[in-house]
Image (cartoon, rainbow, N blue to C red):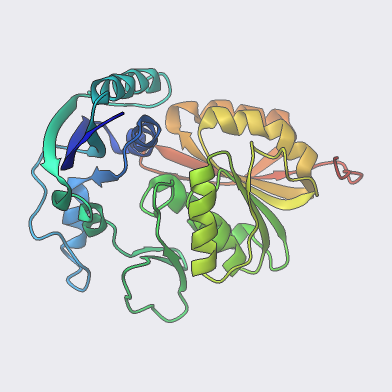
Length: 318
């Protein structure tokens, strides 16, 4: 039986880059961390010009971009930290991890339980206002509010890949369209599409993400089935739009399935594409019969809105 020093936790900090931050956070969750904080000194500088929003009392120490995870102080924590370090080194093949240096300190539960909330503020992206569920900001006229509690799932509205998708969605979604959101995470993109008038189905392979997304759909009063599954394996009817905010390699693997699941003239909104992998994704899209109608870039990340010039006799797959 594992025993825990009551109220004591290990704060594990990884020095990394904004481009790799969300994936490092995923590694923390896989390792067994029960809370993750993204510490970005740039955020404080961006928000201090907006006095109407909440800020941490002091600027974070200038330690660069860090991701912090929290492990119960139980026997076996050393193996978990070693597993995290191995995962970070494996991630280098896909993303610029930076130094990846890991530091550890012991803290009490009261020090961190709600600390991450101080860094999660309302974010305006295009017509959408992404709002933490525990805040009640004034919503600008004409804005579409997306209320979220991200829990332990990807998609807070602050990451460039999510923001790129939110920026492109109003041009990609028609009222009444059938939209699939693949790797839905917190459900943010599925909810945004539903609030634009689409009929949406969402899927994620992680049961935790499925639970988080389901709760966020209820919070936003949108009816979206959220399924546990891999890519498009459980989504059969031809769709008007497929959203895939995932890694470049997974986007490439998804493309053949997308061809089989899209209506002629349907589109794939692909993001999570690091700039050095962008040509690979573009080549795969073109080879499959897609025409890239729009592309956006923010920091090191790209998103493509690609229309499939497919066969008019596309069939439902069973």
